[in-house]
Image (cartoon, rainbow, N blue to C red; front, side, top):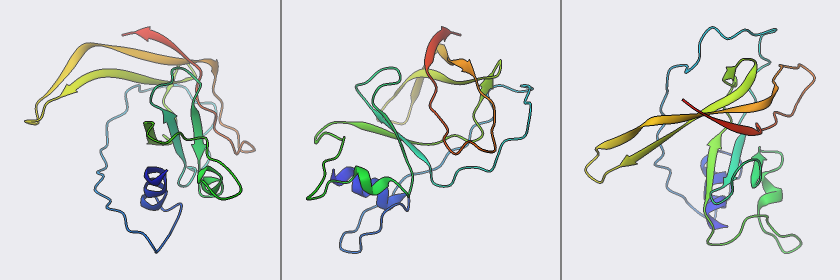
Length: 156
């Protein structure tokens, strides 16, 4: 769980002055994948410091946790509680995308397969998958939760 503590420290969810962590991550921006998508209302304000933690060995909607500064401490091990994370297990941390990319009013994301070589060259497979949620997504001012999508794959 030292990895999760480091992650929480690096994204400003947990400050422990007794430990120091190296933050070498870089941010990259990509243009919108899908344009001219109809929206019934403007999106509410962006959630602040919201992250999705995914079990690297899980598939579908299982093994996904939404972490924010208010609940991050519940995922850290303590003398009175356990953590859902397994030691020596791999997880993926992804900043919550806002506003969500919509395809026919459903949340979606593109899965691209690539291989990065040690010399910096990258090879990208010519096929990709568009993962589309089963239900329409609507912005709601009252909604404070932003559920993850239940996926069904579509080859593109």
